[in-house]
Figure 1 (cartoon, rainbow, N blue to C red):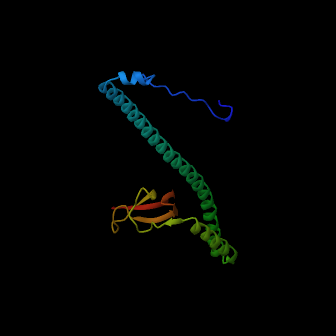
Figure 2 (figure 1 turned 120 degrees about the vertical axis):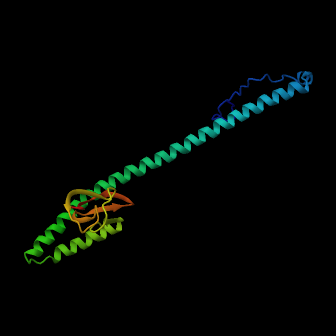
Length: 182
Protein backbone atom coordinates (compact mmCIF):
# COMPACT_ATOMS: atom_id res chain seq x y z
CA UNK A 1 0.00 0.00 0.00
CA UNK A 2 1.17 3.46 -0.78
CA UNK A 3 0.96 6.15 1.88
CA UNK A 4 -0.93 8.45 -0.54
CA UNK A 5 -3.76 5.95 -1.08
CA UNK A 6 -4.53 3.66 1.89
CA UNK A 7 -7.30 1.85 -0.07
CA UNK A 8 -4.91 0.69 -2.75
CA UNK A 9 -4.40 -3.07 -2.89
CA UNK A 10 -1.00 -4.26 -4.04
CA UNK A 11 -1.13 -6.52 -7.09
CA UNK A 12 1.73 -8.69 -8.32
CA UNK A 13 1.44 -9.79 -11.93
CA UNK A 14 3.02 -13.17 -12.49
CA UNK A 15 4.05 -14.43 -15.87
CA UNK A 16 5.31 -17.83 -16.93
CA UNK A 17 7.64 -16.29 -19.47
CA UNK A 18 10.91 -14.91 -18.24
CA UNK A 19 10.92 -11.18 -18.63
CA UNK A 20 14.11 -9.46 -19.57
CA UNK A 21 15.78 -7.74 -16.65
CA UNK A 22 17.77 -5.13 -18.48
CA UNK A 23 18.12 -3.61 -21.87
CA UNK A 24 21.35 -5.58 -22.39
CA UNK A 25 19.45 -8.86 -21.92
CA UNK A 26 16.84 -7.66 -24.43
CA UNK A 27 19.59 -7.00 -26.90
CA UNK A 28 20.92 -10.52 -26.46
CA UNK A 29 17.54 -12.11 -27.41
CA UNK A 30 17.21 -13.02 -31.05
CA UNK A 31 14.26 -12.09 -33.22
CA UNK A 32 13.22 -15.74 -33.20
CA UNK A 33 13.21 -15.85 -29.39
CA UNK A 34 11.21 -12.62 -29.25
CA UNK A 35 8.70 -14.02 -31.74
CA UNK A 36 8.39 -17.16 -29.59
CA UNK A 37 7.80 -15.02 -26.49
CA UNK A 38 5.24 -12.94 -28.40
CA UNK A 39 3.52 -16.15 -29.57
CA UNK A 40 3.36 -17.43 -25.98
CA UNK A 41 1.88 -14.14 -24.77
CA UNK A 42 -0.66 -14.15 -27.60
CA UNK A 43 -1.66 -17.70 -26.66
CA UNK A 44 -2.12 -16.61 -23.03
CA UNK A 45 -4.29 -13.67 -24.17
CA UNK A 46 -6.32 -16.00 -26.38
CA UNK A 47 -6.79 -18.47 -23.49
CA UNK A 48 -7.89 -15.62 -21.21
CA UNK A 49 -10.33 -14.35 -23.84
CA UNK A 50 -11.79 -17.86 -24.19
CA UNK A 51 -12.19 -18.12 -20.42
CA UNK A 52 -13.87 -14.71 -20.27
CA UNK A 53 -16.26 -15.71 -23.07
CA UNK A 54 -17.09 -18.96 -21.25
CA UNK A 55 -17.68 -17.16 -17.94
CA UNK A 56 -19.87 -14.58 -19.70
CA UNK A 57 -21.91 -17.33 -21.39
CA UNK A 58 -22.29 -19.15 -18.05
CA UNK A 59 -23.43 -15.90 -16.42
CA UNK A 60 -25.97 -15.22 -19.19
CA UNK A 61 -27.32 -18.78 -18.92
CA UNK A 62 -27.58 -18.49 -15.14
CA UNK A 63 -29.31 -15.13 -15.48
CA UNK A 64 -31.87 -16.55 -17.93
CA UNK A 65 -32.47 -19.63 -15.77
CA UNK A 66 -32.88 -17.50 -12.65
CA UNK A 67 -35.35 -15.22 -14.44
CA UNK A 68 -37.28 -18.25 -15.72
CA UNK A 69 -37.36 -19.81 -12.23
CA UNK A 70 -38.64 -16.56 -10.73
CA UNK A 71 -41.36 -16.28 -13.39
CA UNK A 72 -42.40 -19.90 -12.85
CA UNK A 73 -42.56 -19.37 -9.10
CA UNK A 74 -44.64 -16.21 -9.43
CA UNK A 75 -46.94 -17.83 -12.01
CA UNK A 76 -47.38 -20.85 -9.78
CA UNK A 77 -48.46 -18.66 -6.85
CA UNK A 78 -50.80 -16.62 -9.05
CA UNK A 79 -52.31 -19.81 -10.52
CA UNK A 80 -52.87 -21.20 -7.02
CA UNK A 81 -54.60 -17.99 -5.96
CA UNK A 82 -56.74 -17.97 -9.11
CA UNK A 83 -57.76 -21.60 -8.57
CA UNK A 84 -58.99 -20.78 -5.07
CA UNK A 85 -60.77 -17.71 -6.41
CA UNK A 86 -62.41 -19.77 -9.19
CA UNK A 87 -63.80 -22.20 -6.60
CA UNK A 88 -65.45 -19.26 -4.80
CA UNK A 89 -66.63 -17.90 -8.15
CA UNK A 90 -68.23 -21.26 -8.98
CA UNK A 91 -69.98 -21.24 -5.59
CA UNK A 92 -71.45 -17.80 -6.33
CA UNK A 93 -72.71 -18.98 -9.72
CA UNK A 94 -74.34 -22.04 -8.12
CA UNK A 95 -75.91 -19.86 -5.41
CA UNK A 96 -77.30 -17.47 -8.03
CA UNK A 97 -78.76 -20.38 -10.02
CA UNK A 98 -80.33 -21.88 -6.88
CA UNK A 99 -81.88 -18.54 -5.88
CA UNK A 100 -83.08 -17.93 -9.44
CA UNK A 101 -84.85 -21.32 -9.50
CA UNK A 102 -86.67 -20.37 -6.29
CA UNK A 103 -87.61 -16.98 -7.80
CA UNK A 104 -85.52 -15.09 -5.24
CA UNK A 105 -84.04 -11.69 -6.18
CA UNK A 106 -80.40 -12.22 -7.20
CA UNK A 107 -79.47 -8.61 -7.97
CA UNK A 108 -76.91 -8.56 -5.13
CA UNK A 109 -75.23 -11.70 -6.42
CA UNK A 110 -75.36 -10.30 -9.96
CA UNK A 111 -73.34 -7.27 -8.80
CA UNK A 112 -70.78 -9.47 -7.06
CA UNK A 113 -70.47 -11.74 -10.11
CA UNK A 114 -70.02 -8.67 -12.33
CA UNK A 115 -67.12 -7.56 -10.11
CA UNK A 116 -65.66 -11.08 -10.16
CA UNK A 117 -65.89 -11.18 -13.96
CA UNK A 118 -64.13 -7.82 -14.12
CA UNK A 119 -61.39 -9.14 -11.80
CA UNK A 120 -60.89 -12.22 -13.99
CA UNK A 121 -60.79 -10.09 -17.12
CA UNK A 122 -58.22 -7.65 -15.65
CA UNK A 123 -56.01 -10.63 -14.79
CA UNK A 124 -56.33 -12.19 -18.28
CA UNK A 125 -58.23 -15.22 -17.02
CA UNK A 126 -60.58 -16.52 -19.71
CA UNK A 127 -62.99 -19.41 -19.78
CA UNK A 128 -62.33 -22.38 -22.03
CA UNK A 129 -65.21 -22.85 -24.45
CA UNK A 130 -65.82 -26.58 -24.71
CA UNK A 131 -69.41 -27.49 -25.58
CA UNK A 132 -69.60 -28.91 -29.10
CA UNK A 133 -65.83 -28.84 -29.54
CA UNK A 134 -63.60 -31.88 -30.14
CA UNK A 135 -61.95 -33.18 -26.97
CA UNK A 136 -58.42 -31.83 -26.44
CA UNK A 137 -56.55 -33.28 -23.44
CA UNK A 138 -54.58 -30.02 -23.15
CA UNK A 139 -57.78 -28.13 -22.27
CA UNK A 140 -60.32 -30.74 -21.24
CA UNK A 141 -60.62 -33.58 -18.77
CA UNK A 142 -63.15 -36.24 -19.77
CA UNK A 143 -64.96 -37.76 -16.82
CA UNK A 144 -67.77 -39.54 -18.64
CA UNK A 145 -68.62 -40.95 -22.05
CA UNK A 146 -71.98 -41.08 -23.78
CA UNK A 147 -72.87 -43.09 -26.87
CA UNK A 148 -74.19 -40.93 -29.70
CA UNK A 149 -74.01 -42.07 -33.32
CA UNK A 150 -75.09 -38.63 -34.60
CA UNK A 151 -71.95 -36.88 -33.31
CA UNK A 152 -68.32 -37.15 -34.31
CA UNK A 153 -66.08 -39.23 -32.09
CA UNK A 154 -64.82 -37.31 -28.99
CA UNK A 155 -67.24 -34.40 -29.37
CA UNK A 156 -67.90 -32.67 -26.06
CA UNK A 157 -71.58 -33.17 -25.23
CA UNK A 158 -71.69 -31.69 -21.75
CA UNK A 159 -69.62 -29.26 -19.74
CA UNK A 160 -69.55 -30.35 -16.11
CA UNK A 161 -67.15 -27.71 -14.74
CA UNK A 162 -65.80 -24.66 -16.55
CA UNK A 163 -62.08 -24.56 -17.25
CA UNK A 164 -59.88 -21.46 -17.41
CA UNK A 165 -56.73 -20.19 -19.12
CA UNK A 166 -54.40 -17.55 -17.70
CA UNK A 167 -51.41 -16.12 -19.57
CA UNK A 168 -51.70 -18.89 -22.20
CA UNK A 169 -51.55 -21.57 -19.48
CA UNK A 170 -54.41 -23.83 -18.49
CA UNK A 171 -54.96 -23.21 -14.80
CA UNK A 172 -57.97 -25.50 -14.62
CA UNK A 173 -59.11 -27.89 -17.37
CA UNK A 174 -62.78 -28.11 -18.28
CA UNK A 175 -64.47 -31.25 -16.94
CA UNK A 176 -66.48 -32.70 -19.82
CA UNK A 177 -68.57 -35.56 -21.10
CA UNK A 178 -67.58 -36.79 -24.56
CA UNK A 179 -69.34 -38.79 -27.25
CA UNK A 180 -68.40 -42.17 -28.67
CA UNK A 181 -69.91 -43.76 -31.74
CA UNK A 182 -72.33 -46.31 -30.47
